[in-house]
Amino acid sequence: MDPRPPGGDVRGSLRNQSGIAPQTTPSRLPSTRVILPSWSRPTEAVIQDHRPECPMNRPSFVVSRRLVLQGLAASAVAAMVPAVARAQSSGDAVLFTIADLHAPYARLPALLARLRSLRAEAGKPAALLINGDVFERGNAVCLKSSGAADWAFLEAVAAEMPVVLNLGNHETAILDDMTSFVARANRAGVQVISNLVDKRTGRFFAPFDARLGLGGIDVSLFGLAATNPFVYRQPVRDTLTFLDTARFVTDALPGSRADADVSLVMSHAGVTPDKSFLDTLPSGTIIQGAHDHLDLDMVLDGKTYFHGASWGRKIGIVELSKGTDAVAATYRTEDVAPTGGDEALAAIIEAMKAEHLTDEDREIIAELPRAFDLHESILIATEALRQATEADVALLGHTTFGAPLAAGPLTRYDYDAFVRFGGGVSVASISGEQLAAMLSRANQFMAETLDGMTGDYVHVAAIDVDPAKTYRLAVNGWTAQNQEAYLGTTDIAFEKVEGLELKALIAAHLAKGV
Image (tube, rainbow, N blue to C red; front, side, top):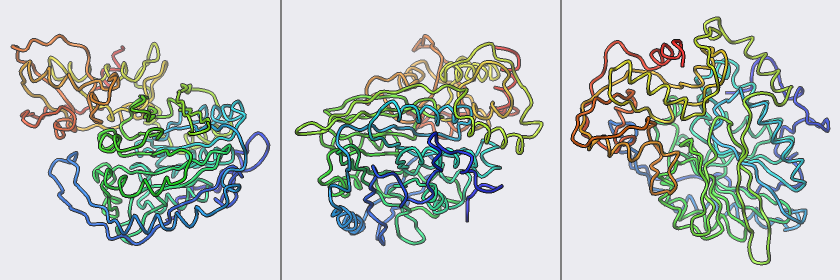
């Protein structure tokens, strides 16, 4: 399947400031990049398939050592490329990082423009690392246009600097085969990495590692995928073989990073799988996390670990400086505005909207007096749920939501970017002691240590809990179904509330004014 967007190739309208058209093949990438991949090899990976009734329970998998060794053997051959070819300039380098984009059309032009300006301001070799989830099926324009604006963004940024993308679970949000995405990304000049295995062929969909030669620094990149099959769409799910994350890191990473100046792991597995291998990594390793839509950075025993938010809200900046004995890394972030940016990309987005949005999509459902940050936005939704169910407290899962609410008219199209998933709602009577335990793992975006993070979590408004009191709790259906993952419990007897649907009740609440 060719995922090329309809209406012809859009690359011609997105030239960079020097007038150079985006490259279309990896062989024409900028001279600062040399990709040294571990090419696909036949796999004997064994799957222990314990498919649970609860979608969020994660099955366990075993990786074949032969698979890893064959991949690394190919990588070792590539590593014989002379050092002068792998890193052609001296000095420092910078890596820009983004993750969990989900077709953020309000910010995508500004994201592209700011990446260009940051690269120019850096004045040193640079590359962009995208840690998965380019597309969003709930974005009607993305779906109906086959991601025309998203491909235009990737092609334009690949014309500016080397781009490496680790596969997430939303690369097939609008495609039915991961191979289609990999092929199209390669044509766009994007190097794809991942440890996802194609069950049909027994081969990796893409190399699981790569090398960047930037400013005299040899950077090893290593890609990890989300291993919960239920976060992938049904048409794709049965084509995937998953490898145990911690075991794969143990078996494959030492050989992958051999002789590199610095090792960077791009993990779309999520914070909980990340915690299973972080302690095994040597000091100096950089870990770019994703999948959980977290915004965090910390240094753990000399290792830099960060998640860079989602929906194009932030750009991560990793400054690399090569010393006598090691490469030092510093990480910071920069916010991305929800307006302005690259005019050519903005024009493509507007053209796609004009073609694909219906009158219903354009319907204005609310006028918002100001912009709200993401947590504030979600608390508006939890209050809508609390009122609709006459509950004492309402909890909603973090990835139910995408872009925060902006000031001004809120169209249904924009609303769909805010509330990504609908469905039923459920209630239960719980003790104050049970509620306190749930709240202890809520609002994890505020957690200061990894010990307080479980990956999946709920947003909730502040509440004083009386342990002796009984509370009426309201949640969305997904949280009720996956209460162990989100609430840390398995014994809550939730009852579905008939006649209420999550997206509809939040929209009605917003229409009343906030």
